[in-house]
Image (cartoon, rainbow, N blue to C red; front, side, top):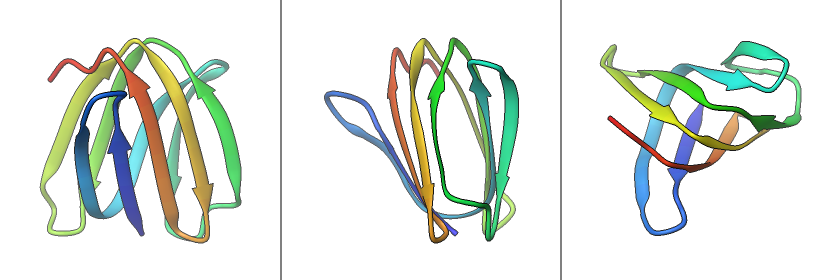
Length: 82
């Protein structure tokens, strides 16, 4: 599964992952390989990415959106703090 994390002014991360946890407006949820297609608004909270090599990437966001389609995840966020 691949992810692209973008802010309005830069690309934060792009690469292969095994999972991502995000703060949805209705609560935190996790996306794994072969997840059903989804588009969701995100609220303020923590994003946790597990890379394919086992590494971790954690950061906080103010708000944003996530789109999942055919093992491609797009994370469009504002206010990234590592």
